[in-house]
Length: 280
Image (cartoon, rainbow, N blue to C red; front, side, top):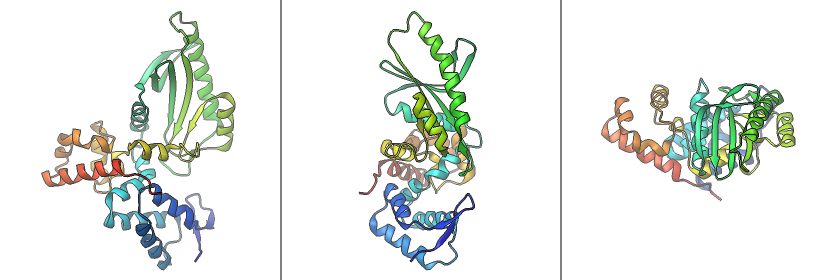
């Protein structure tokens, strides 16, 4: 059975059942559970947009396996880190920290011409990276080539100052741009040409942002379907952005007026989200 759906951009296309199955596999769903979701979708004539299908899948998974629902909820969860970009910067800092980097957020770094506030600076061994985070709170917004051009100009100004430093040694310096949506093809082409690392929802193919998050078990607290919008915002205000840190934030959860039982259940759910792996 095939049918057309309306994408968030307003374009119409055939529903890609294979792509939908892959997204559920990445979330850790079993083939049996995926089969159940797909069969239910095929029965529903009212599900004719990506939003409708997404909402239905989240609701279905929430009733059957909440940790899977949380992982499948990742794209919305990253947007729920907003509306401002700072929580997303903090989240990306955690992604690099989990890979062995020493990180700083919002550091002022001297350039040759002017000083620059860098979203995240990360260091490991002889590697030093300037990481700029482009946060969007709408799915169809993209980061274009102007963003990459701007970051390259800032990076070059900082790099010149680094290289004039007598204590510089032989450090490797580089720049990253990370977004929670996608870059345009021109932005990716330019980044590849000038040596900027680009990380978005789809790029690079095997190590994109969702794949990295799943591999490292770094799911945002906003992914949990058991918390409402207000509770998620309060967690973020308290500096609590990762599911894996739930056990360390019992006091924050108490301030949300959750019972001891609810807190225990939420911690267990959070840890289950982080420990799940993609089904092969």
